Image (tube, rainbow, N blue to C red):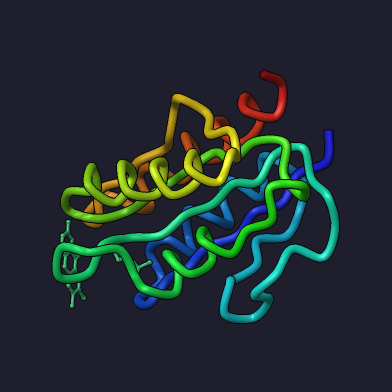
Length: 131
Ligand SMILES: Cc1cc2nc3c(=O)[nH]c(=O)nc-3n(C[C@H](O)[C@H](O)[C@H](O)COP(=O)(O)O)c2cc1C
């Protein structure tokens, strides 16, 4: 299975979780600001971000809106925040409208417990590669 991990992070929380998932998956975590497009097809794309002032970062929205359906087998979402349900819902909606499959399960880490969730994020990455 070929995988990629992409994230948007202003303050570093989502980056920390992305790097933990990456460790489990065995690929490098890359910020969407450093690489705005996927360079090759992947079976699984782990995609993460956070809400700021009640909405997901516009950079993350634009990435999901421009993601090419032909490049991705499925997307697995992850978020960090105080409360991310709306961001996850919005991302799912954008991706589904573009016919990109989204795994029913996502990974969540509360912003006050990022380090405490790193091991679980690593295991989540490993597990999601297998199913
Ligand atoms: C300016 C600002 C606005 C935020 N607004 C929200 C919000 O509306 N809802 C929420 O759940 N968390 C909010 N947060 C918390 C962030 O989503 C949370 O700290 C997240 O982990 C940040 O991810 P990052 O470190 O990868 O940038 C906000 C944080 C900042 C700095």
